[in-house]
Image 1 (cartoon, rainbow, N blue to C red):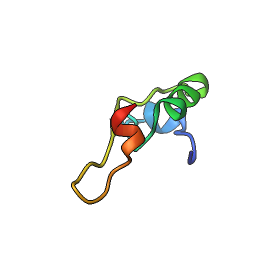
Image 2 (cartoon, rainbow, N blue to C red):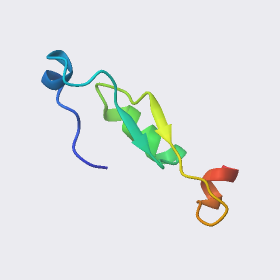
Image 3 (spheres, rainbow, N blue to C red):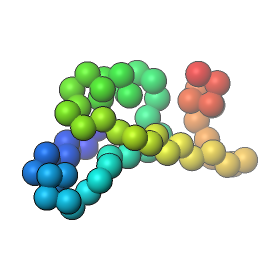
Length: 58
């Protein structure tokens, strides 16, 4: 899932929010269970040629 965001970076103003990309429901639930700073956006790529059908339908 990548490295968790340090609270000190948020505290000192280096970032205001956290976003993720292409997470499915199970991945988001796992992240919410351990995250101290929850993501505000789940950016998902959809195009006619490349997309995750399960993510679109689920």
